[in-house]
Length: 154
Image (cartoon, rainbow, N blue to C red; front, side, top):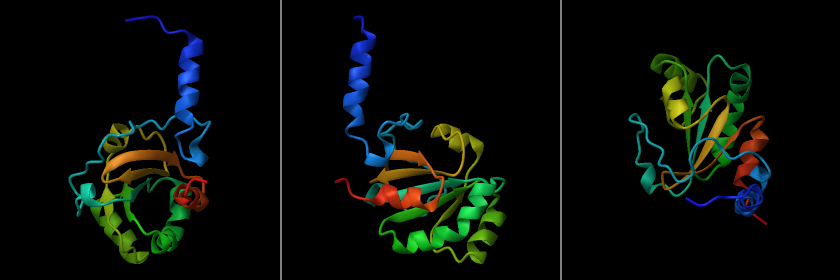
C-alpha cells in the first residue's frame, strides 16, 4: 500500500464534496455508508422498487422529535416519495401515535441496535433512499431540513 499525503487526502475529500447535495456540502459525511441498502424486517413494502423514499428516525424520549411529529403529516402530504417513520416506541405506542396523528405512512419500531447499524447517533435524523439504497443522511433541526433535502440541485 502506497503512502498518501494529507494534501492528497484533503483534495480527494474536496472533490467528493462537490457531488453532495447543496445542504450537505462542507459538513461531515453522514455516518451511515452511502450505497448500503436500508433493510428492516417490519417493512410493509419492497423499498428496492421505490424510486424515492425517506426514513425519519425519532425517539419518543426526544423533545425535539415529539415537537416535530405534528408537522410530519403535512410534510408527507406534500412529499411525492415514500415516507417511513422509524420510532423508538413500542409497537403499541407507535400504533397509538400513528392513529392519534392520523399518519398514513408506515411507522416502524426500531431499537438502538438498528440506529447504530446505520450510524445514527442522535434523533431526529433522516435517511434518503433511492430504490432502497442509502443516498444521504442528515440530522433534522426543523421541518425545513426535510424540505431542503427535496430541492433539486441548481
